[in-house]
Image 1 (cartoon, rainbow, N blue to C red):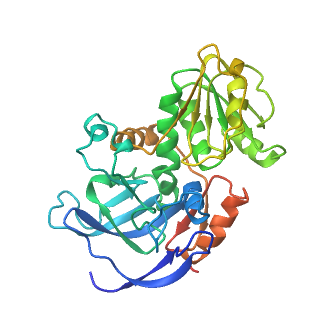
Image 2 (cartoon, rainbow, N blue to C red; image 1 turned 90 degrees about the horizontal axis):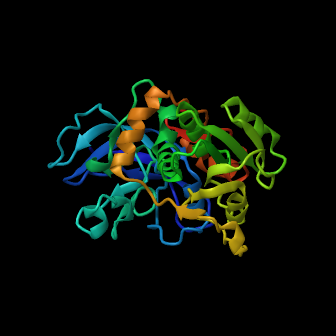
Length: 335
């Protein structure tokens, strides 16, 4: 497909994205060419732009929560007719051959490639993606509402699985992922306790609107011990705080790709079979399972839409904690 497109491009960490005119890419043999309708703005994008994730492809088009329609296919692609709406997540390619891929852990693939990091992503009008990592989306979701499902939803869902079956769940950091995950947890009959920045009355009220049993500052102990806690805020000091909040045998799941250093803490807060574990990326099975579950909950995302040209403003709003729900670039918005 000949022609040009607009894209927001990162040339060096710590610099604003630049609006550029680029050729529309050609799909490879196993890729689809996608017309992007919406792309959510993730904290991982912020880590990439700010240089906290240190090996991005440069220049880079960020964005890995893509909602798009197929407009072209490579020679070996089947089952993706033009006009089909799909979502594209963070994991954009895996080898299928390493010990992790062979054991159902493609999220840990030795040579994995990630959308908006190793591969150009969705802060653009068009992109290409490996057809194996494109997923049909729930029909009821509008494009801007579906976009946060592709990372905030998927990574949150994987983190929830790692948290186990406990009924008392703490969520530290009430942003895009937590506002989706609380809906899933409540659907499963769990009691949710939301932890925000100290003094964030709006965030705490938002959590209560979505069914939180309790909401308070991250330094405040919950009213009862937790069975599990999931950390979405990239703050290492929250790890010992969460360990102190979980009951014996409880688990603390770190849901982000980057976190500040974890301070030392006494062994006593880990003792009694408490666990700390991390979530890395996602598998295609996670995507299929979550996208099948989301309409049954039903998950409703709250979004703040920005035009493509305002990607830097969206990143700054996320950086400053001014987004209620998820920030999304809407390619149909004027700007």
